[in-house]
Structure formats: C-alpha cells, structure tokens
Amino acid sequence: MPCDTHGGFHGDGERLETFVLSAEETERMQQNVAENAFWHSINPENKRLLYGGAEGYWMDGLLQGHVPDIENGYCCVYNKQTNVSEFPKADAYSCNDMIGIYPADDNILYILEMDT
Image 1: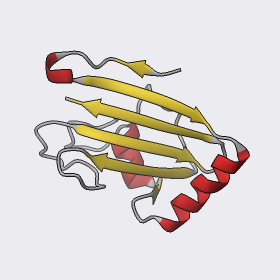
Image 2: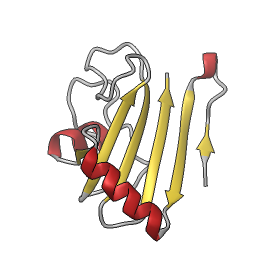
Image 3: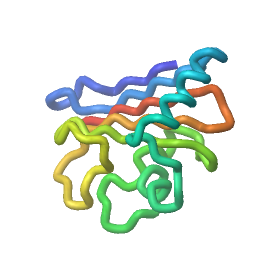
Image 4: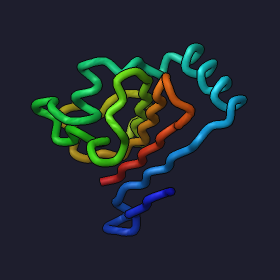
C-alpha cells in the first residue's frame, strides 16, 4: 500500500511504494540489476546509510522504519537535485532522492521518495 506524506512546505514529504513483481517482472528486474551500473549490492557501507549508523550524514537511516532490513539485495539511489545516481553527500543541505531496494531473494521492489 502506498504511503505519501508530500504536501508540506514546497512539497516536502516521503512516499513509499511497494511493488509485488510477477515472475516475468522479477526476471526483467534481475536482468536490469545485472546490466545497469546504478544498482549496487547492499553492503555494510551503504547499508549504514540506508538503515542507520553512518556517522556524519544527517540523512542517516532513510529506510529505517519504511523497508524491512535487507541482507541480500540491491539498492539504487537517484539524487533528484544533481540528476545523478549517487548517495547524497554528507554535507548536503537537503535530500531529494528516490531510492530503489530490490531484495535478491524476493519478488518485491520498494521505492522510497524523500523530499526535504
């Protein structure tokens, strides 16, 4: 079920979409992850940014409370301010990002949009 809190000051808010993929969509998603460099394996470093524990980042833990803790999967972060697939810089003054999380052992795709 989608959750959307946009509508605050200049459209600030968060939106979470959860997509349950069909077998065909799962196959296409796995191909997309394999072929595109913007998808990254969830590793200890980016997991701290996504779920909490990365010191010095004000946006630490973007997914905490939104998306289950994924041990084996992939993430993609699209920075809407810079139009680049990258994690926000530690000294960023705001966060306008879309984050995709794809658990490798599941047929679910999570998309979190955050605008501050």
